[in-house]
Image 1 (cartoon, rainbow, N blue to C red):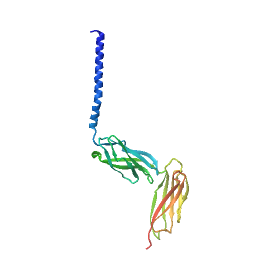
Image 2: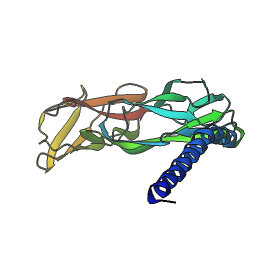
Image 3: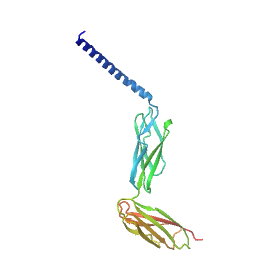
Image 4: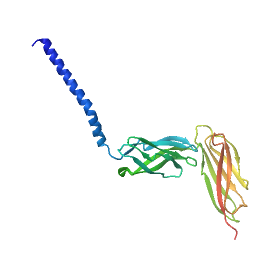
Length: 249
């Protein structure tokens, strides 16, 4: 057997090996697909993320987000209920039934008025999947009030015809990186004196006040200061206080 014949035989062996490999690859793909399909559970759901951190927003801005999920099973998945734990969180819409392998969305809106600081809001999802009947989604982040009033509302207590005076105090706090200037303080139309004190220039102020009789009204009575500032979005602030005027006997 000469050298040329040996080389030809070796090439034939290599070609046959490659043909066998191609054959195995081509005919094993459908088999692998069948095996993978059989391994999939009949019901399953997976969210791209179950916790969404929206970072920092200004009070009054809405936070909108779509929680995206995938039906990982071989049967339709139905979301029977989507319920926020707080009235400030709204579920505007969601995909009720999703086919196998398809994606769905839950659209939520978080309302931030009157909210300050770090928050965590939960949405409860109920499905028809026995092993994933209840899923908890979470929105979290920080709501920043540019100019914060502490306290927002003040309760001064009960008054009657013998009450000589009532007093209270508000703190005005700048949470922005811009200097805060108070341009005007408008008191309520009652017998009241007040003083505005600078605690920290451009950053913190105190508004102290004293109310004198007569205390008009009956039952719960409310009044407010209006404070004008240079901060965009907080140009006019309402500082509210309340007292209870006892009825005459």
